Image (tube, rainbow, N blue to C red; front, side, top):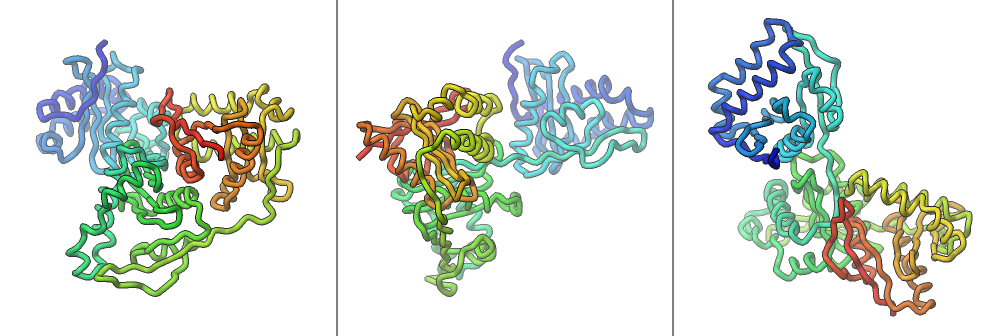
Length: 457
């Protein structure tokens, strides 16, 4: 078998692909149906209007090829998967999953529906679809209505994503914000675009930019400047009211150090920011047609947070905290194998745990009363491998204080540099603290990190 190729269907592919769908349907699904229902699907596939819609690109279709042999197809109508069929000789080779991944990514919608035959239900359940009703029996046909919620990952924008993210922001700005501006501003819309210096600030990591990704599609973005001002926060209209803006705002604020965060809100976003906790600092402004309300968010300051070296009985609660925060913020970026690897190497590693208990390696904990709300741990005396803070204590300077304690300890030992491998989620914090990348972002079998170094004063 050659390497399987997945690509969009060309006009000349459509009839053969629908023919493959009919053939597989007759083998797998038709035997389960009553006679009056058996011909319904083949007749739809042969319908000239339906065929023409696929040929003209009104609806998406993707095909899988083994060399010059057509071995699979998937198609869409609206927000539903209408076809997914694989040549039986090619079952259990991952082709259906690859076709589904490609089709859903191209559809670009937050939820995907379908009606599954009994034969297909196990595959769709494994993929992540869930039934929305009981199995249906109508007019001799049998199917289960199912739905899939497309997962969204929020992480730091990679260099090649910065320009597309800013183009995305411009598109959403023109759709939702620009209509509230007066004509003079509408005529100067280009001023909303970023300058070369601003682009460099994001490329070099001096300013943080985050993207919300559904597969490889950007569905949201947020960016800041100088650690104190949020410049942009935009979410694709089709993905509104799904918590993405709140998650982006949480993450971008976490990457910033200032006790007060400012922004200029459009009319469209004003209620969202007020609900989050931003407060107007002045009345609505109209400067040359640009309409906005200046707002500020005061960080909650930690109360009675104590930073100290971990005692033997602190170590297990601190590692449990690290695992809990890792599962919430970092595991979604990684595969199951890398998540399990983190658990084994860092959380359940008896030798590492013993090194922390005996203080052969340094660990510091942040305590609110007797409760661990943050932790930092090293390995090999000059490498930090664990930095985690309870989400309820984010944006309160806890991570900075933990890092201060660890770097001070390393400096007193005579170390000149501190190394770590940063996750995409943590990179903005480390850049602000003073770490600098020592190499490009790495992807080792699904483990995504950037090697970084901090020169001790």
